Length: 454
Length: 171
Image (cartoon, rainbow over the protein chains, first blue to last red):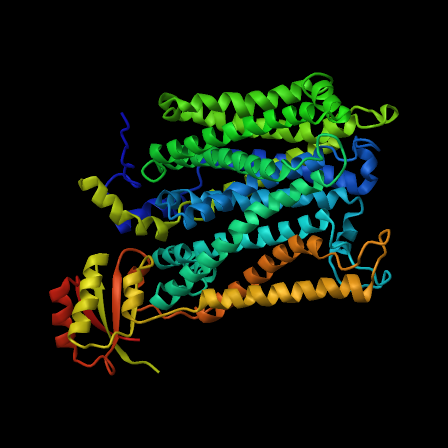
């Protein structure tokens, strides 16, 4: 009845070490493909619109946005949380699977970490610009200053957020970069042009692959991995306390930290899936990112989707069970029904219903279906954040303060701009950096060979 | 100062491990081993140990003490604020920021420790006996003066263990 399948080989095609290096470095050595140039042109266009919108905001002030006294947080906080959520999976992916010694991570972790760095970078734009006078953003640094000897409020989740995200960005970027150092050395030592040798030689930091270096390298990986695992959970918990520590109906709930962390990992894994499918398809790396890898991600997604469904149900149940009329109103008259009910049901359908089709093995092995579902999940997670932020703020305790919110072109422009910035980053990553961790893949080649023989 | 080195090149991890075993049996002193990915057995064979985790723990402990002291200083000594008579030393609300700042501190200090101890930094002049080690070869390096045997003896022993080539090089 219960038949456990042995995991298939991690790398297909009977590769040797040299072949692995060649395959993974090929996109760097080859000419820039036409689709890459096209995608870059579109991304630059989007990013330019975003930069123009940012300029507009700085030039004319926050009055150019549709936020108001009631809905003081609009698209900016939605997009901030959305990007941070996407950024979550990279480090979660690398670190939890590293700690759990899951060898299948090796083909995917590099791209996931890259995605994290770009996504967190995009996220950081929003709180900074939301301050209004962005050039005074440095006020948030805790240092004795000349504006009266006041300290920042160390007890505020907003300040925790600032530190947590700075730490997260630093740790993700360093985890990513130091992971690449041995691979940069591989490129350096195979480079045929002087320029390439010099550039990748500089990036490789003098790496040689001696036991002395590998020993410390492993030490650094586990130390960073261990502490980042705590950080992954705490960053999004802290983001959730930005909401949960307020007394706004729909926000003031202890469910928020786990709900946010799981939701973040959900959207991040979906984005990992999107990226891996693109890498596989356009760079012909099917031997490294196998169907089995995508199948594993799909299984994780379907499991998390169930947790999301449970969280949505729990929220609604608690609103009723608490007997709190404000909570009741928020959930039953302003989410399930009312002005923003589309957002609520879109969220439920995209995050909790549609991913359930991945129970079917047929769907899990259909790459097009997986690609579409991964995009739907990311859309659904955006609706979730809209649902949380806007519905609660638009109609709270005082009916005289009720209002509706829809963004201006400036707010939409900033969001579109961050999508452009993210894709520019990802495209540069595709072009100039080994997309798969070469040294790590080599280290799992042997067990793969053995499993193939059996 | 340049000196002559003997370089044994292996095609696989198993051959490398046999080569290390053979060198040990013949009492040759290995100078260094270069591999395309981390090989724990090679690290152990050279008796290398790292105190990285202990260092990280000390950084973490110092950071916890440092951050809590700093928070106590800012909110109790330097600028106490009266929030409706609540105590200024609000320890429970210091915990999260302490955790996050500790992680930030450990990360920064660990990166510096790695850079200093493994001598990995931008612009470093490196010493790589065989460029193929960052691709597909495993190399055992002997310093001819301290290896404990001549080229012929080492070459014969390594080839018997499966070395694909053994050569001398001035490095």
